[in-house]
Image: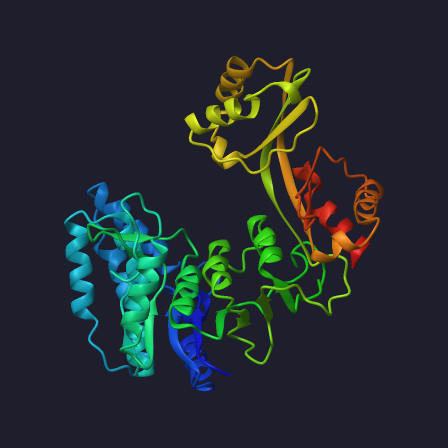
Length: 436
């Protein structure tokens, strides 16, 4: 086919058994030349992720508590894999350097990144590939924002020197040299950046599921798989809680028009889900998928002649900016406006926010609806099929689900409804059954 970049998530590189599967997958296709790896994930229920253990080491160090035993657990995980797979490498120098920096008060980002670093060093030796550190290659500015152009150029220049390489995901560095991590799951982003830099024909993202499903299998029994999905559709589903792929991983691949293939390390024969620029022309379903999240609060404002009042929305947004809060959705009407905030963002400050909005814009009334869930029904086919909204709302009415909010994007790619948390599962089942 052509050059491929393959990223393997935490479950795919959790222990020696999984690494053996990973090696077989890589060696089965010589086009898989650049490999991005996460830190080891959980091996079984009740196990700990390496990144969580490293964060715990940092917490102990910051509070002057002993962390030697915790760090030894981390070291033992890597040493066990090395011995089980008979990998010819000395990891002790790496452990010593990390422990020394931990004792000197390293940053949380540094210690969090060491799981990916150590795993990449180990896996490179296991595969016989070059190890290429992403420190200094993936570049952030002084405010922690990714420098796209500089990162692209640095990765391309370095990887041209290596026929095959393993790179750690999740992190890069700041202008002063400090390690800077992406948000959790950010190894997906690293893989996408590498794919763009080397001009890959395919970016494979290997995990523990066979691609995307049309709904959460914990809610809907045996939901249909999504064989092909567009970047835009996936962006909507990822934002609303479909967590197979980090939502920011879409942008670098999309900019370079590189397809993303979500694959299952434990079932490599499954084709998975292909993510491309264009929607699936063969998909006869009205919708592509359903996703959602719980625990939101809606602040609903009413003000007579709101539509004619200049600066109304701007003043509300300035209030939320002062509280350093991001907004999820802002449905509006002629005299009404609703603001959707996650409860995590609010962090118990709802009364303060409401008081500040009251003082700033003096609405005729202001109400709050807590314990809300947001559900997105997504699909390119929705805009071409009359009666889509009627089908959705009828399904929810028949399931006795009260809709508290409706928001539809201008692209007609999705319809978002707000329901009470207690109705979340029931609503998703009703929508799925109505369309699928």
